[in-house]
Amino acid sequence: MGGQVQPKVSYAEQSSDITVVRLERDDRGSALDIHSAPELRTVLARLVEEGRLILVVDLSAIDDVDSTGLGVLVGGLKRVHFKGGTLSLVVTNDRLRAILSKTALTKVFRVHDDVPSAVATLVADYAEEGIEQRLAAIEERKARKRRATEEGIMVSGDHTYEHVTEDITLVNVMSRDPGGEISVYTAPTLRELLVDLINQGRYFLVVDLTSVELLDSTGVGVLVGALKRLRAHDGTIALVVESERALKLFRITGLTKVFPIFATADPAVEFLGREVPTAHA
Image 1 (cartoon, rainbow, N blue to C red):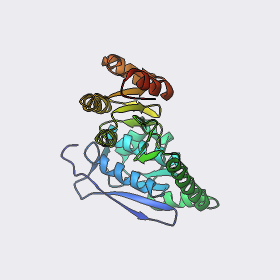
Image 2: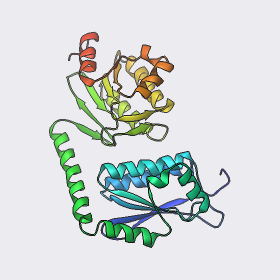
Image 3: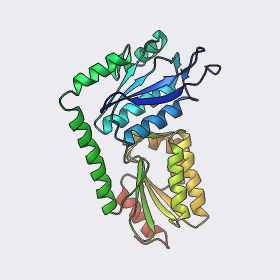
Image 4: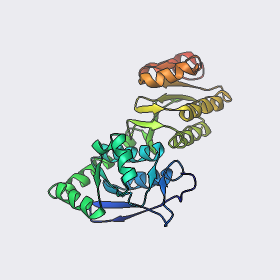
């Protein structure tokens, strides 16, 4: 797939409710892979953030897809489902259909032969409650954000954080998109948040990974990098880990000896307040 042309991503409102996202190519073919998938992820995330919750992703121009591309499609579906929306696919390539079938994603996505049929199906599905449902989801999201602000909880992308004491900050990772993953594609936003907090002088952090479904080596690297930065200021990190899969990763890498790990946030905050002389819980 390395020699194939990388598709450009565009989108257009098909109606007041439905947005069609298109991956375009030239005559040489195109793939949704590790090189091109991040652009699609960015577009889908932006549309969901803007409240465009009924999406059709047109893959008519795509000849092939790898695991990264599939991950972006599944991640996009999870994002819209979390907000109360849906995401359908348009697939014309036999190879692509075979891959979706083999990975059982034809049971997850509605797959259509063309954009008009995808749109018509969605219009029929949402004819009575589409607009109301979408607007209700948007208003609820806005209300959650207002409540969070009033409660002193700040939002940073898919993450939130709050200064629970004068010295200790609780970072809730993926709290706005539960079930997500901290990987090579999503880790930079967490890194940016942690670095920003450290630059603000927040040297005692509880990083709550309860909402994280998957954590890979890149995600672990972000935590280790933050710990190194904090130690330069005599600070530290405590982790909250619920997933057995994530705990196994920390055990295998020996990081259970590096990070204090707790099942819930309260004991992690108490630990920092008790064990670190300059932090007060």
